[in-house]
Each structure stands twice: as structure tokens, then as C-alpha cells.
Image (tube, rainbow, N blue to C red; front, side, top):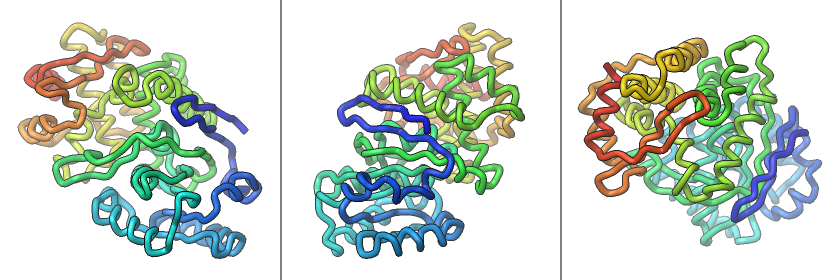
Length: 350
């Protein structure tokens, strides 16, 4: 078992091991400490792992309730959030009770925000079932739901009690869902690890456990340095300002991973045109994104992306922080005016 300790306002462990979910009941101190549990998952996970969830329910009895939501970004909404709060209240959950998020980023973000706000905060555990959630959204305590105006506009920083990463979940993922996580993994290589970036070039010989561990260690380090996203943690937003705009403008017809891959390519191309990033390294980045199956061409209207970008939650008044690669392993936070950020977008799209 690989263990990564996150040391921020609330210290917790990230445990990485094949088959760890099957042995969940072996964590006696964890289960006993949780008192009553509401496990939140989606219909896809419930269908694939129904037998495991039934066994868990039989073992824990009345201690465990399971709440199943519809899959997809539409469930990361105010309506779903309020329904779950009402469910917890109707079932008299208290501060000594807890939640488990079993699913991808939507389930994890939603569950974390419920945990942060129900009774002003109860415990929760992240058990990510996608590569994307394992290396990104399950770690660091960012929780959120979407509003009509934009993605993740209502949320809170609220750390989990523990994160359990079981790579065996990834074996059941459709190819496109598994691929999504590699947009974030490639991002980690660009912002903090040329070694990780270069190791990804050999797809056939890449060790998934090591890739996850390397990615999580990079994120954990940035979270420890800057838990509330006011400094270096912003580096994790590489590709996300433009990526979020692409998600919203496409009405989520592009997945998060696809949109982030496009966003990374846009900002890398703009950086090259500005003379910051070498053409060789830009081509390494774009080639790696393509190698992992991402279509980095954007078929959306520039004006629509600009309109959405203007309400990005990372704005500070009339300025916005762009995360710009100057080299692989050398990525910087650059505060720009909105018009300058729009210029980067236009250059990256051309």
C-alpha cells in the first residue's frame, strides 16, 4: 500500500492499493469512527458494483444508507444538492455521522460540498472510481456545485477525512472516461515533473500505480503550501480557465478531460507565440495530448468562450490569473487584464 500524507488544516492520508475497496470493512477503526454513513454514488457505479454495495449494506446494516444520483454534470446542481440535504435531515443524520463519495468528480465534488455545509460540517471520505477523480478532484478539499452561470461557482474548501484510491476501479472504465484523467496527469507533468511528463510518452509501459502516486504527490505538495488557492496552488488551473469555458459553451458535450486538454493546448500555443515556450516543447505537449487520444481542435465560437471566461471564478476584479507554461516543469502564474487574457485565447485558437 502506498500512503501519502496531506498536511494542511486537516491532516489526512491518501491510501493507494489495488483491491482496497473490497477490503473496506477491514478498516475497523474507520468504520467504527464513522457511526452512521450515507454512501453517495451514481447509477453507473451502482449498476457495475451492485453486488459489492449489497454486501456492504448487509455487513453494515442500518448503519449504512445508499443514495444514488444520475450520472453527469447535470447532477452537480442546486436541485440535487438540496434533495440530498433534505434526505440527511429527514433521516436525522448528526455531526457524528458521515458521508462516503463513491464515484467520479461529480459525485466527489457534490458529496464534499454537502459534507461541508450540512450542520456546518460533517466528516466524509473520498473513494474515487475514475482516473480523473483519483489524481485530481478527490484530493485537496475543493468541493462545489455548478450554477447556471458557470461551473463550480458555489463551493467550499473542505478536506476529506481520508481518500482511498483503488486502481482496480479503472479496469471497468470505458476508454474515453479513462482517457479523461490523463489530461490532468499530463498537466501535472507540465507544471511540476518533467520525469512524469517523459514517462507518459511510453503508453504501453506506463505503471498506473506510479503515475497516480506521482500525480497525487504533486497536488498534495501544492495543497500543503497553499490550501485556499491564493498562491502556488493556482498552478493546478493550467488549461482550466479556457477548458471550463469550452465545457460550458459546448453545454458539456465535451467532457472535463477533453476540455482541459484543449485548454492546455490553447495556452501552450499562445505561450509559444508570445516567445515564452519553445516550439519544441509546445510540440511535445500537443503531441502527447494527441497520443492519449485528445482532439485538441476547438470548434466553438471565440466570442462565446470570451463571454463565459469573463465570469470565471478565478477573476479578481478586472484581472484574471492565467497559468502559463514557460517550459515543461516551469509553469507560472501570470496576472493579466481581461483583455490580455482574451488575447491569449485568440492566439491559442489561431
